[in-house]
Structures are given as structure tokens and as C-alpha cells.
Image 1 (tube, rainbow, N blue to C red):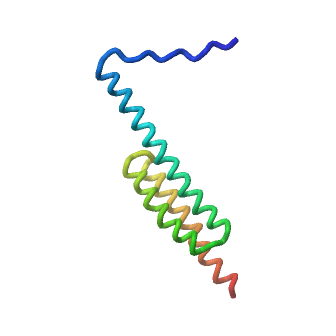
Image 2 (image 1 turned 90 degrees about the horizontal axis):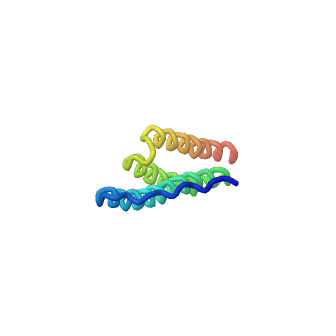
Image 3 (image 1 turned 45 degrees about the vertical axis):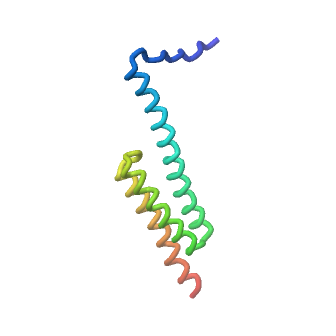
Length: 104
């Protein structure tokens, strides 16, 4: 039988207890923002996959602000945010250039 995970001890010092409270709040806030980030990227990718240029452009503009917010808060590195924005922009741009070619 595998041993159960050892139970974490509560900090004795008041400063330690406060740190635990703060970490819990920060973790919840960061998790929420990370989820928002992933959802924004996913929505743009879905719009691009569907071939909806107008919707992809609109969602990309919203996703940019979410990505910038995440980078500013230091949840993801600024280079990762820039890389993700660049890749999304390329997909949206490719969709824009493919649409006129398909219409012609």
C-alpha cells in the first residue's frame, strides 16, 4: 500500500500564517488569469480554423489585451507573450490573405 501524502504543518509564526493566506489568494488570481489567457488564445484559434476572418480579427484584438496583461503581471514571461501574439497574428493574417485568393 502506498503511503499517503504527508500532511502539511501549519506555520507557527504569524508572518508565516499570513504568507500562506496571501499565497492562496495569489494562486487563485494567477490561475484565473492563466485560464483567461488560454481561453482567449483558443477562441482565436477556433475562429481561424472556422475561416471566419471578421470574428478572428475581433477576438485577436481582445486576446492581445489579455496576453499583455498576463505579461505585465509577470505570470508568463514577456517573450512567451510576444511569441504567442506573433503566432496568432500570423494565423489571422494568413486567413486574411487566403480569403481574397479564394474569392478570386
